Image 1 (cartoon, rainbow, N blue to C red):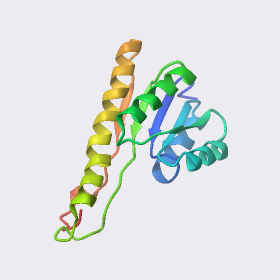
Image 2: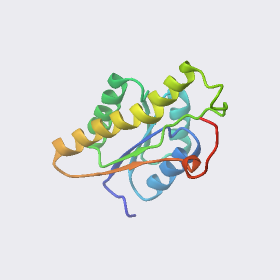
Image 3: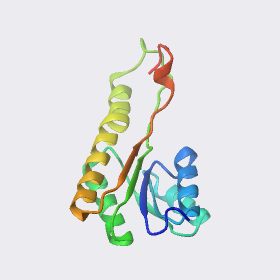
Image 4: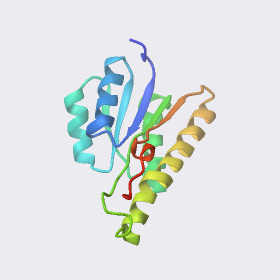
Length: 149
C-alpha cells in the first residue's frame, strides 16, 4: 500500500473522476476526504467506498468553506499530504451565447476555486513542515479548438 499514513483531500469527489481517485487512494492506504458541495452525496460516496474515506462539505467558491475543509482534514488525519483539485464545471453553450452569470460561475469554480484550494493546501503543508503534493486536474477541451465555453 503505497499511500499508508498519507491523507488526501479530493475536491468534487462525490462522483466521476474524483470518486475514482478517492477509491484508488483508499485502496492504496490513504485517508481520503471526499470534498463536495453536495454533502449528502459526499457522505454516500464515503460510505460506499468505506475504509478511511470520509465526507467534507466543500464549496470551492467560498473561502471560509475552503479553510474549513482543510482544517477538517488537519484535525481528522493529522495533516494534509495530498490535494487533488478536481472540482470543475463546464457549459456547452456556444461562445456567442454564454451569459455573464454562467461565465462568472465557471470562472469562480474552475479558476478561482482551483487557485484558492491550492493556496489553502500549500499553506497547510508548509506550516506542517512535511511537504506534500498538489494535483490540478484539467480537461482536454483546450487541446482542440471549439467555440464552446
